[in-house]
Image 1 (cartoon, rainbow, N blue to C red):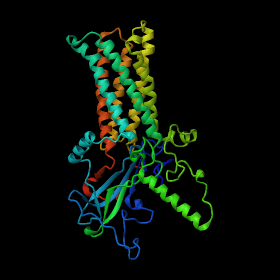
Image 2 (cartoon, rainbow, N blue to C red; image 1 turned 45 degrees about the vertical axis):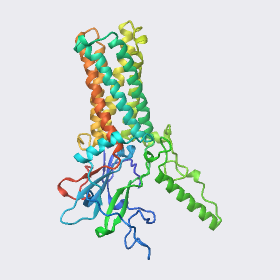
Image 3 (cartoon, rainbow, N blue to C red; image 1 turned 120 degrees about the horizontal axis):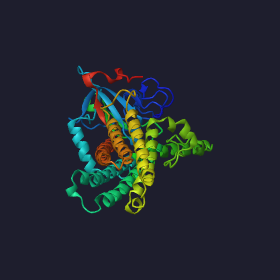
Length: 447
């Protein structure tokens, strides 16, 4: 079953816009059982195991494990880009327990672990992690810039020589450049999404727990686990391809018939030996048939266009350039207008990122990390756009003050959103508990 689904919203799938690809799908755990022959790390039952073959040993249950009655995978297009694998579980009721899962991650303890992971884990090979770190760094630079341009207006006694023009202009250029780099990586992340279904959880039989099914993070085929280069096949996927090629070669030796030409395998099938491990630019066919219908891709595209136009204002903010913009028309056209256009791109991208996580465009999703990231980026984009719009009235001291203040609170909103994105990029296996103890298989998203 493909993880990227298009067309009308099918059963169990939903999204904010009916004319675009669905963005959320709840998949029962039963459909995620391995299709390959059972291995020592996969689920064995009396029917699956071969006669005389010992069942795999399982580690003893941890006290931290959650005894669950039902398990369901919650697929989101955003999570797929980020290499995340979300589980929604129903806790045990009336001693009707079937699964052992890791503890929920959306608790205070799980959140503290995630915060500690932010300062103790550095997966520099993970493009999603790099995107989060770069946007966080850029937001910090913009916060510094905001102090340079706003604090002297609030408290003139704190101003030093060249603070607004020199320090403010240089930090604006650095911040805009960092945002541009992050936006390019964001597009690379979008076009290198996993085009095949990735459960991301290994299953095994917990023998000492009367045959309960234990789920543990493993078997991910997303490129985020590849440590050899920025974007490529994960180790799990490389192993699948290697086994497939070995099997094909063995058949050739036995039958004498040459294998099929692997170069004819579709490029969007990651399990084929000809699958791409890196995509700089998608083909026009891929754009028209898939990406232009993806809410997440459109959000990334809006972000990159906005950051590119916004960079113009960062470049013209450099003191040697801005000093030569002596006329009002030159300042409006080369400095303030790119801020308005770029900020509008940020507003659009933040809105789309927020809507991507929602079942309907009018139903907020405050329990999803990606929703909060979109909201804070939306507010930050409003602040940057407002700064540029008020800049057209630079002759009015009140507009100058409010424009500088908009940069201040907009920068802090971007920083909050980027920090949450940093946390999200390291939380690859989120586990949430269905409230009320109801069976998750009985709950369906709004279609």
